[in-house]
Length: 579
Image 1: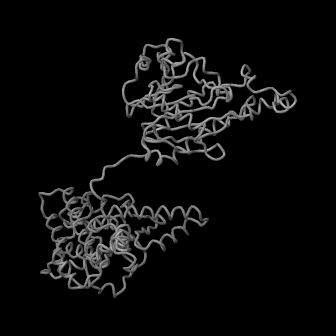
Image 2: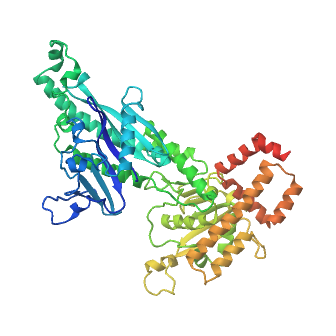
Image 3: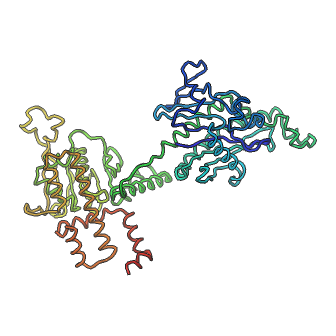
């Protein structure tokens, strides 16, 4: 993440001061900062921690080293600094971390070496401890502009028995030029920086309590004659943060924390290039994921048992896929994340067509595309789940409602894919219905084609598949256009399985676009049937099967798309344009 994290302090003698800052370097170290990487230096110490290689900058120059650097350094002069506003001692090399994964270096010192960065950090420090203050003076705040960067600032107090009010004022700031990224990182930065502050305050509180126990300052001050505060400049009022926390390794620990903060904050959010608008499947998946997160939050707030949660989820997820397996209470399968399967599964639509045979597969695929209920009866749970996993690829995500395996029949309004145990009785009206197809899986002996024992790759040969329906499809029936194109792709042996999958994606998107046009035309604009027939002819979907398919696929449109159309129609500007 291209940002700077700094610790600032409001010195009672010199005002706002930058104590310690960590910056990111994507290029070779600046002049005088890279010489410390030489392996010949005896003082170099390396430590592996969290994938970041730690080492000291042996020859880097501090802005407060001496008179030769005071004239060229952007930092304050040594005479303008006291113990309270100085972090690293004169001549200290500072710290540097090497990220092996990205070849990025994290450099820490009291001030940035670059004059422009020093000016940005200095201004952010002053605003953080003077004018940009939240109510109560402790807490997070956001400020900044395009020219000087945007700042996340968290101010806090550190206990000090020798300070006015027995406390000193500090802040930790994060500066970057990307406002959106910084705002999106607010919860993460707040949590982690709050943890660093709590640790600093805890260490200082222990020191404060020990000093107060040995020599209480409050009673001593009340019994002492009044002395102007400015007369105490030569006393021990200004103390370093290492003295306040009694931690000699404080700056090394802060460097590690700041370097990790920059690395973690930069890797938690990534940008993705989207070529065009998101598909309907993507929108539906995002909506389902949001619904699941809301349900999980409600479960966390409730005190019910796990079985009661599973039952409530099964009752509340209309249009959502449920897995009723005996081994697990419930299994959501919105994203196709099934249980680990054996090798006796269907690998693709082409594989399923070869196993079932062309006529049976066409009947099964027709019912799938039309939205009729597909029932699989079999003993092998993995086989049934893999069949549904393959068949669902022919439908939009919003049209898929799966119960992979159940011990009782479920009505069609709850699921269009239903897996049943072989012992479950299917109602007679379903067996004779033209809106359902039943696939029965029977176990048979190994075929004579395989004289050897059934191999794992050929384990489907031990099954017989019987596909039946109350309304069988006539062999001379044209069927929906998309089904004919799918079969043409499956029979073309020049196309690999991956190419067929991409063809299927394109076909689904093409017909979903037709569904959107039909939805806008009929549901939103409420056009008459004559105009609708003309539109279907233009779309190339005037046949009966194509019309049924479009109406079924219309149920898979995302809520986002529907609400967008409705809000557009209800807006005054759109009504004026239509008039």
